[in-house]
Image 1 (cartoon, rainbow, N blue to C red):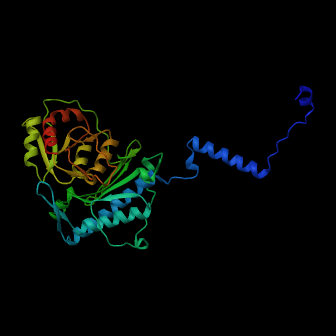
Image 2 (image 1 turned 180 degrees about the horizontal axis):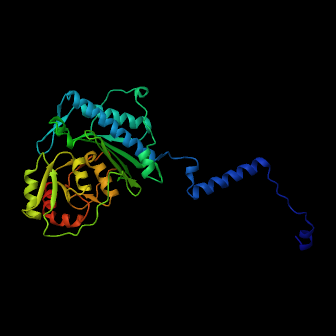
Image 3 (image 1 turned 135 degrees about the vertical axis):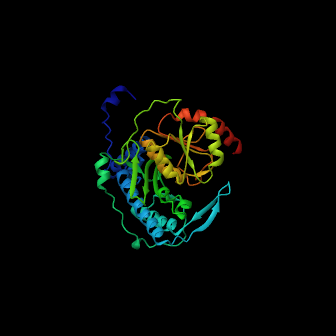
Length: 349
């Protein structure tokens, strides 16, 4: 074909009908969405307002505390043995445990449907949520102390509840040790902690990096002096061996306080009444999560005796077997002194 012939050919016009144009546009848009990771346009993940979750956690810890108080005042404990620890100590369950469990668990489920909640207690009876009291999602004290907010995907949150910490002491009417606790973990990190003391109506709460209740105060940095005896708080249920180990680690003049309830002991450290909380036997995560969050929020630390942080992400691993150390200051100083104890625990597990 000659060049002159080509020049004389009419230009070719390509026309796309409107329907085809729409289809092409949709295909291009889908390709962009897929390639640039914008799939959430189609699959919106549910998010929870953390400030509301904090308020609900406080409300429910207090509601559970009222149940604990009512049962104790009526002296209607109905205590039962639910099991034994590895060391042979009796684990009790009372009506107070169960009433508080129902109040907190069902209240949380109604306020935030679909939220993963892990409780110390269990119940298989069906529940009618029409009969469950609504929970306020706004609190004046929270609004006063917390000035900003955060929204977290539902699937990144696990709530741990201990409806009644220090059940043994509860049955013995040692009221000062008894607490109800709620903890919010985000991707395994203890983030919000609430510890309510029902018998003196005090509630302590904190949200890491956001704020804490007015009855919690950061401690002033104190110079570590070898001349001043360490003050260590331990469990009253099996203090014998741990007292010997602590005195060997820190000296015979170490002041060792025996107390009930992991929540009580964690607060004791937060308030500066003890330098450290040491635990050497297995402990459940619902016992320690709230205290861990409060410690973190006030620049303290809680780790295993190996120095590892504790993961709160899974209901499949509810127990910590590596011992426990909680401090507000000089955490690694105490870890170093407790290293022989950590190695001993490592051999057992």
